Length: 409
Image (cartoon, rainbow, N blue to C red; front, side):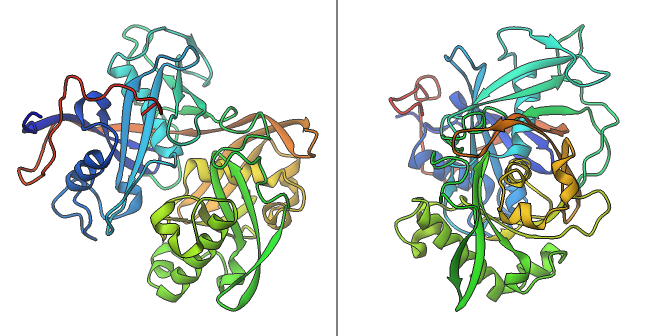
């Protein structure tokens, strides 16, 4: 064992409406308890303020991206997403993150991790580099990013006029293609590998706090348990701050999440969901849209708190669910959604559009997707050396501790 280094190289990027620390896997402890301890300590968790670390007090700013080159023929790099709890002692690596995944392409391009220049023009007005990203600990599938780059230098072009809801300013449009993430083959699913509709029914019923509610579970990009906002006493357009201050409501949402997780095999019992599966399934409380052009309105819950905007993969799952006949999303959405090639998810900060197109249905009657993608922007915020706290009781071999094990970790 070697002494922990005083500093480690790191970058801090905004991806979509989230922010994360980005690391080369070779620079941090190997997968396991020491890595979790390291990530919690450098983020400043557990502490609601995360005052002694890099976290920003909200789940959307308490994220980590870990990247390594891939040996797979169909991938350039491998991306491990870590959601670091703000106020509790856990790190979850079973989920992905659509917003942070938008920062992976710019990071690995600028870090020189792309072997082949596969240039195209997948975004109008830009030369784009295709980046194939394998997710070994979450979906175990490849997602594809088309990243604007300079033809001369090959580096990420940040400047652009594309605007996303929930983030001020503009940037270059990064196209995130999620077709392969448990979607082209509807028998696999993205999270529990039981298909797009893991309960086998578009709508199910359960008791939550003594009241019967209807729900839909859809497994695409993220596995999400959908319920009507009205069944939780909400109009559906409440501000996340008001929702997060209602502790009784959050307890009901947690009860719903626990029972949904247990139903699809993500936890031993509903009461152990935060221990066994802290992030998935996410919960989305949906309602009819109130904004012109939107197809559905949603309040998404991450780490037992209402999201300030919308997860990219969360909107992707919502769009996929809109094509499941009889699902709650299909029931509540504007019916023009079936005719449109873009599905607009209204969230607290605006609208997140998802490009969607289907190619008929499979033998099980569920849709087969030929297009399921969204556009995000990203920006470098910082790159340099991150100080490792001297009180952190973790040491590792920075040269040789991060090889792949039998589980791909």
